[in-house]
Length: 321
Image (cartoon, rainbow, N blue to C red):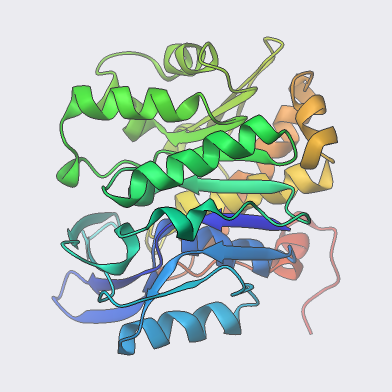
């Protein structure tokens, strides 16, 4: 089982013609749905409101096979994210965050240890940044890494528009990286935190803080990965007819975790194997993430592919019926 911790919110997507569409979203929830569609057992630890948007989120998670065993029913309203698309389909975001369900974690809600069947914990995005809940999420990551039973995967997934400032965000991200075995970030995030510093140098800086694998997505430039033993690899981007980029980074994370499961890199044994991952293994992991991300970009909104679609795209699955 993979457990994802973080927000499940509502995306209001505003197109270039100013039409608006509401859909389930939130980076961690997107990762959970993508993992479920890839055939992985996955649960989501999120605070879901009792309002109509909360009902929509629960139905979406259920319909996609995400376990709801770790959901918390919240009194606060759902969070709204406004995604505005430019003519090329690139999304920019603004948020209605004040007093909403996703950030109001209380200590007892996250103090419960991960279930015995959990072999990976994924976290990141706004849930790791916004008080008061962020401190409790970070504590869970710290305890999980110390326990040594589950691989911790962290994606800062920054939102500069709601950040406390570059220096404060850099300190927070570097502190949270210390609790992770795997760090995945975009070149945009790395460049915002460390202006002018090449992605490879950012990866090396982060690896010195403790993770065994650092991955930085480079958009059209592909994906860069750095292993604990010094292995480095850059995988080219997968060609795609892009409709929009909503959920692409989350889909990459799911594809990465899916490949990690295939390569036996989850759980205690996986933690041990991560430290010695060679360039060939890193290449397979990154290629999996890149493919799932590209296929998501070919669809409108955060609509990741199912495992059968991915296998067909690779040429290893049965033809479509």
